[in-house]
Amino acid sequence: MPHISQIDYTTAAPDIREAHDEEVRARGHVTNMKRTLLHSPPAYRAYMEWYTLRDELAKALPDRAFWLYSHAISAASDCLICTLFFRRALIDAGFSPEEFQPDEEEQLLIDFGQAIARNSNAVPPEIWARISERYDEKTRVDLVAFAGLMIATNIFNNVVEVSPDPELEPYRKA
Image 1 (cartoon, rainbow, N blue to C red):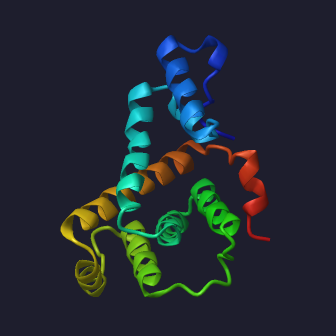
Image 2 (spheres, rainbow, N blue to C red):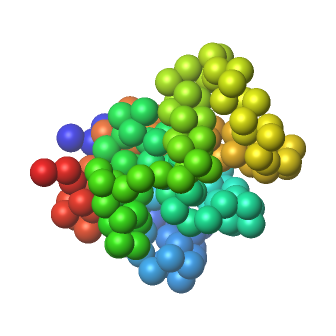
């Protein structure tokens, strides 16, 4: 059971309703996590920078590589909601998370994401060397900053015990 409720739109303050409505305009709906974060508009805005970094990484990474990176971070953080979110992205794009064969870039990003999520003080030097060979400094900054926001999202969902959105349930592993 969640430790923090979701906002009640009908009784929420005008700034909260405005942020809610903007999220609906931007993405078509408001997830359980976002309805919980909206209790604090500054916290909500901070977490929404995830999309800004996602847009920056889209310039350097194919979608599947981005989804695999995000999934690796979420799975290593043991975040059910985020893992399901990225499983859905992969499955809806026609990829089986259990049966795909990652290419070299995807495997590197999986390894990097898992290493960051498991112990950010101990990313293996050989992974850093490969990341440095493949990506420029701006992209490396964006990858690490994004991982930090992804981990923060994982932590928020795990600590608060946000309930998975109903549309994610079909994407659970059997």
